[in-house]
Image: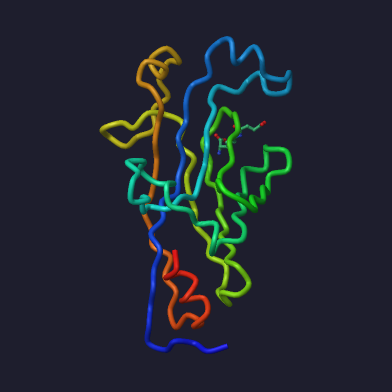
Length: 172
Ligand code: SLL
């Protein structure tokens, strides 16, 4: 196995979450132990590059050919709080009542010889405010404002990649 010295190649990603307020109907349908849940959210890792014919922001390009697993470590109030996702889409959808920080561990395919990478994301449920101060609006206001989005851009950089891995990356 040969490393290509002096070369770096990167893949752009976005990671983060969207959240919506549950309707009264949806809240009724929750299991008894989750009756205090107010939101549904999805946390995800996606490509920041779009496929040629796509106007989708994020996710149109696939990350599955070089990422083996994404582990989302949720707040310990969640059952089985460590969630392993081994295929696309790399995301977890849950309901809940509170914001918290999720640890996101990205593991690459073994052939890459790359170490896992850890990202952190604050699950955002409540609308953005001018002051940046957290402010929990009445549920009706939150519903009217629509989904909350919180996404970050990053680049996964591979330095001195193995020749075979470099070939794989460039073939996609
Ligand atoms: C807080 N630091 O105290 C935060 C913790 C925990 C969020 C938020 C549901 C868990 C369950 C849930 O929303 N946990 O399923 O019981 O505000």
